[in-house]
Image (cartoon, rainbow, N blue to C red; front, side, top):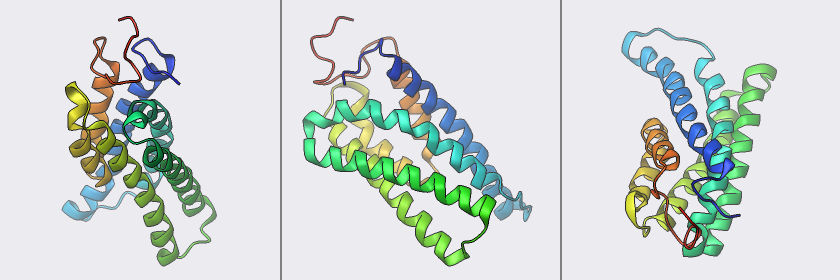
Length: 180
């Protein structure tokens, strides 16, 4: 799969990054209001997480061909782990919200494991992209921020801006030789 600045998937992924960042902020607000003011907004964070991570799926598919030439096996494993983690988060959150068969401990173990897979995907992909020319050289630092969850919106907006850019902000072997 080649990603270039005219790719429909690249366009979808750029707007998905922005949208997931906005949704993540909406999901963080209940956590902040609970700690700051003692006001709990039930289920808003859990609902936002579902939408946020569904929006991350196109991003995984766009970043993979850019990172793969630098670490083929590791980025493939990371991609699979990231997609499994994203799907697991969505399913776990849906069960937590609508079926309510999980106790708190089971929920935390399951969601923690899924988030670890997603965080690992972000950091491994960011590490492979860090040797890129241009703005992606900051991808490892930004991916570590994304893996913390609380700084995820910063990563999402940064990446969305890069992917949406009409210039060759996203460069690398997957893009070499393609006309601007």
